[in-house]
Length: 420
Ligand code: AMP
Ligand code: GLY
Image (cartoon, rainbow, N blue to C red; front, side, top):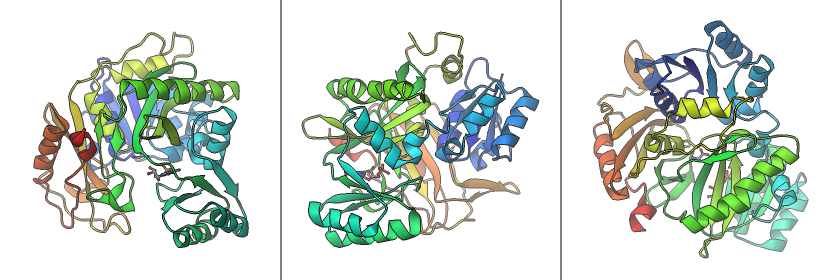
């Protein structure tokens, strides 16, 4: 059978790599893909991004299943286009994707359904937003409404930062800002598969959003990740399912927008082990997907076929098998990332994959047979190990073999898991 993965980042390379291992899978197309999916003999890049052209391609090629990686095509309604043609696709509809694409929608939804999250207020007028900050003080969190690729959030430690974030977001980013109570604690990524009714939990994970060692410097899309996240103890896990995931799935169904696809709850877990929702994403995380899929033993294709079969039992009664080891991924970033990533640097020395090491490509392209950088996050070097420390060592040993001008990476990915 043929499968299509929409997207071209590290998450999509990992999805395609995993789907290609399916018993019944012959070909995995990746649209548009990257330099890594271009060289893998089991994968084929397709130079398309337009939803209608992608649907035409799937009809012509008799593609059995499409999996959507990034949020942008989901928010643009690619799932709705595919479903209208009777094509099987795993992802949320445009309406359900608002859980990620509109912070205001997500916050209002959580409040209405009693899902624990930070207190918030929404503003379109700068003066009222400034007054709100003056009244509540700092730390306080300012968020632009809409997709902002991780750059739409400022955790303001001073009043000055908060006021300037409001002005910036209301003039340069969007028409609305959400101002939130600051939550203290440790973050984790909690991702589940949904068929609209039932859920199947994936392994827990944690990413590192700051560019620098010790979680310092500007926010990025993620400089590395690991799975499992020890902060999600069995007790925390049960609370997340009971207080966040189940009410969300039930609430979406009740609101008439059943959620299908990957649902990603970004959690803040306080010192007492009480989880609250920082945000929802309607997709797998990147680089969380790379570490989660590295540990998944079950046949992902068969699981997603079940999840997208309206006539079947859905995900009910399924259980996923996981590698017990820790998976840890280190992102190799381009010179200037995240502010102004440079493109076009030649990349050599990328280690070959083994049973416990995979290099997932993100911002790479193959130009006349030469691998070059083509984005901020270039590679995610992902390793399995019997402990977080061993997985980290294996990943870093492989990272050091990569040659690319201006490359930078963090050497402390997984430091919280190593401490635990
Ligand atoms: P978001 O795009 O909503 O995930 O926010 C990006 C990052 O900002 C999160 O991963 C958190 O580290 C931080 N953040 C967002 N909202 C809050 C909050 N209410 N309290 C504390 N930190 C937050
Ligand atoms: N790594 C965070 C995200 O994918 O949103």
